[in-house]
Each structure stands twice: as structure tokens, then as C-alpha cells.
Image 1 (cartoon, rainbow, N blue to C red):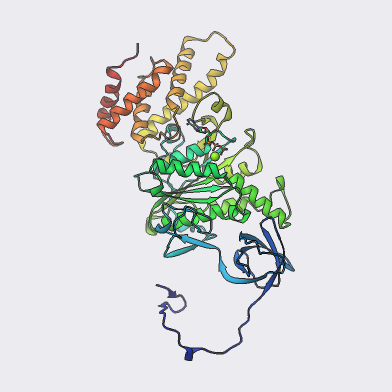
Image 2 (cartoon, rainbow, N blue to C red):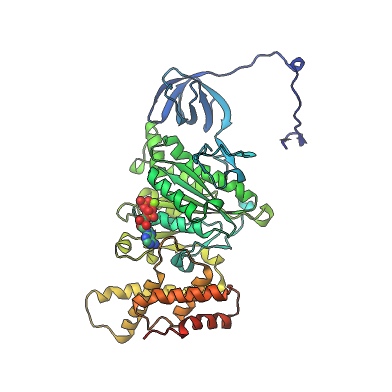
Amino acid sequence: MAWNTATSTPITRRACWLSDYQFGLRLSEQGNVVSVGDGIVWMEGLPSAAMDEMLVLEDGSRALVFHLARQRIGGILLHQTDRLTSGTPARRTGRRVSLPTGDAVLGRVVDPIGVPLDGWPAPESTGRRDLFAASPPILARDFVQRPIYTGCKMVDALIPIGKGQRQLIIGDNGVGKSSLALDAVIHQRGRGVRCVYVLIGQKRSSIAATIQTLRAEGAMAHTTLVVAEATALPGLKYLAPFAGCAIAESWMEQGHDVLIIYDDLTTHAQTYRELSLLLRRPPGREAYPGDIFFLHARLLERSTCLAASMGGGSITSLPIVETNQGEISAYVPTNLISITDGQVYLDSHLFAAGVLPAIDVTRSVSRIGGKGQHPRVREQSGRIKLDYLQFLELEVYTRFGTHLEAGVEARIKRGRVLREILKQDRLDPRTIEFHLAWLMAFNEGRFDAFLPEQVAPGLERLAERIRDAQPTLDTPLDQWQQIVASAFAEHAPP
Ligand SMILES: Nc1ncnc2c1ncn2[C@@H]1O[C@H](COP(=O)(O)OP(=O)(O)OP(=O)(O)O)[C@@H](O)[C@H]1O
Ligand SMILES: [Mg+2]
């Protein structure tokens, strides 16, 4: 029901009668297109137009006010017909850009203004949401204290993520960034977390592959895809992450936990730079406009965990950023590293060496996720992280062919086995109970006598035992120890 906020009374709709009509002076502004090209449109004659307001052009095109100059208005096109030329009349709508949200868009593929791209009818939503809504105030927020599992061994054990956290996935191109994010989405199947996957400026073939993978893995039922492909208008690419965020927020306010992936924000920043330069905004570092930090900060500030009094929903976001030749000190990556609560760094050398997922533990961190980790997992993984980091340092010495002490050699051997354990195929997310099992097995030294090629079959036996016994994280420790021991009892390595 709509409410009159001034009088706090419901607004009742009633039939309009001709006798009720009142004659009066009504003013409306009419503008004209001055020039159009590259996805932007310059207009004049709309003195009251406001930033982020939707404009309708007479040929059916639609634009968003993006730049207000003294004489002219710069707009970004969100829909363009062939008939749009200079001189086309333009009028204000008085509305900000919005899209349909809520359950109607679940399982759908839509563009950033809600137009369906999956061939089905337009989503019949009961509510629309402003793309540029403000982020929740501080008092509405809660601390990040519940874990969200991605199914990836390295992330869940060593770089844990909490619900409401913003964790950057960073790396060169083709190192498995999207695969990691996709696995995280697939792992939410049946776990009550809804997902939004935002694809910005990707090739149509990669978009089709992503949709196909999600459908094949049964993950579309809890996911919405917001797509602005490479050939889309730059305005749509610019709006895509905000559209995904608006959808996620509508669910968060209903008390749901949401996971959102922005794939990727480098393309988004480049689109924003393109639009800003075309609209003659002054360029700054790397030719990005000065407000590029604000653009991403205001997007990622909307991911949070709401307090119980506000419904207790959350938005966890995994923005992806691409680096060039591992250069994490470039402008956009450093901005995003400072905005987010941690990063998962994927390394091209590890990828080339076949260590998949190619996560570089030394350069990855989760600043707040540890608070949500189950105490038992935290205890077991804390010991492993130290072992692994020491091994990576010691391994450097083996390159010189120097003779090593027996103790050092044993630690290097143990580290190599751990690296084998941490390898994981894509589309193979694992449960947190399995993670606890291998952490315990490793810490108890059950893998110590294994050769690297014996590790994968050993892990499979362990996974089978966990599936049969179905322990939870709170199952008593002695039962856990028995389950883990039983997986190694019959198949002790030579
Ligand atoms: N854990 C994994 N196991 C096996 N193969 C993997 C794994 N992770 C990624 N790959 C493979 O690596 C390739 C690149 O992965 P992906 O497309 O996810 O990388 P990306 O960093 O998102 O690339 P881009 O920069 O082009 O977006 C794919 O062919 C994928 O199958
Ligand atoms: Mg990718």
C-alpha cells in the first residue's frame, strides 16, 4: 500500500471523473538532441534536468543524465533506435533509473534495466528499485560473524569469508578468476543463499558458457544473471553492477543472505573512463576521472550484514579485478584492495605450473572472515597456514641444489604434500566438513608418508568416509578422529 508520508495515511486510489478535471497552467520542458555518438548524447533545453534522471527521446530512445554543463546536458544512452539524430526532441521523466527486483527475477537473465535476455516474458515484479540507492546506515549494520563457504579448499580453510564481507578476486587474465567465483555460486545450491552474477563487457560466447554451466550444475534456481555484453551500449555496462546490487538488496531486505559476483570491475572502470572522457570530464591518473574511487566505494559499501532488528539479511560480494602482468599497484586494483575486506590473489606462474586453483597464499588475505570461522576449523587451519608459508620460503633453497638438513627436507616434503592436497578441479566445490577432515588428517601427520600422486586417491577415500558418516562441525572430537583414522586404516601408503 502507498502511504502519504506527510499525513501518515494510506493513499487510496479512486476513479477519475471528467467533472473532477481542473483547468490550469502546466509547464513542461522540451529539449533537443544536439549530437549523438559513441553511446552518449548531448542535449540542450532541459534546465531542470537532474543527475541520474531518465530522459525519453521522441524516437523511443532512452538516456540517463550523466553530466550537467552550463548550456548542455550530457546523457548516456540506455536504449538507442536507428532514428535518433540531432534535433530529436527530448523530455524529462522525473524518475531515476530503476529495475524490477524481488522473486520475479530469480532464475532469470536480465540486462541492467530489467529487459529479459533469456527469451522469456518480462519479469512481473511487484517492486522496482532505484539503481543508485544509498547504502544502509551504520546503525542498521551488524558485524560480519557468520561464515559463507565457497567450496574451495584454500579459500574456506586459509582465507575464510564471512557473510557481508567484500572479498576481491584479483589476478591476470585467464588465471581462473571467474572459475573460482562460479564455483562459489554453484556451492550455494541448497544452502539458502541467493546469488547474483553480474557479467560486464564479456564476449557472448563466455556469457553463454557461464549460463550453460550454471544450468548444468542446477544453480540457476537460486541465481540471477545481470548481463551487459561487450557490444552493449557503454551506459548499460556502467549500470550493470548497480543493477545487480539493487536486486541483491531487495532480497537482503527480506532477510535473505545474498552472494554477488562482479565480473569484472576493471572493465567497469574502463567503461566509466570512456564515458567520462567522451563527456569531457577532466582525466586524472591513468586517464581515469577523479571520482573512480567513489564509484566503486559507493557500490561496495552496499554489501553488508544487516542487524537482526533489520531482518538479518546480508550481501557478500566478490568483485573481480584483472591485473596486467601481475601489477597490483595499478590505480584500479589498489583502489579496490583498499575498499574491500581482503583479497584472493591468483598468480599466473602458479597457473602455468599447474597449481590449480592458482591462489597465492602469501599475497591473499581475509581481514575479517576469520571471525566467522568455526573454532575447530580455525584451530586446525591456523597451524596449516604457518606450515605452508614456511614451506614456500624453504622451497626457494632447493633451487640452488644445496644439501639440506634432514629436518628442513622433511618440512619441504610435507609442504609438497600439502600443495597437492590444496589442488582442486573447477566445478568440484567441497563441503566444510570435508575441509575439516583433511585439515585434521594433515595435522595428525596421516599424509606424511604419501607420495604426491597418492594424495588425490587418499583425499577421495576421506571424502567417501565423510559422506557415509555425515559428521557436522559440532560432532565430538573423538568421533571426528575415529572417522578420519578409518579413512587411512586400510590404505596405508607403502
Ligand atoms: N581449478 C581449476 N582446475 C582446472 N582448470 C581451471 C581451474 N580454474 C580455472 N581453470 C581453467 O582456466 C581457464 C581460465 O579460467 P577463467 O576463465 O576462470 O579465468 P579468468 O581469470 O576469469 O579469465 P579472464 O581474465 O579471461 O576472464 C579456463 O579454461 C578454466 O577451465
Ligand atoms: Mg573471467
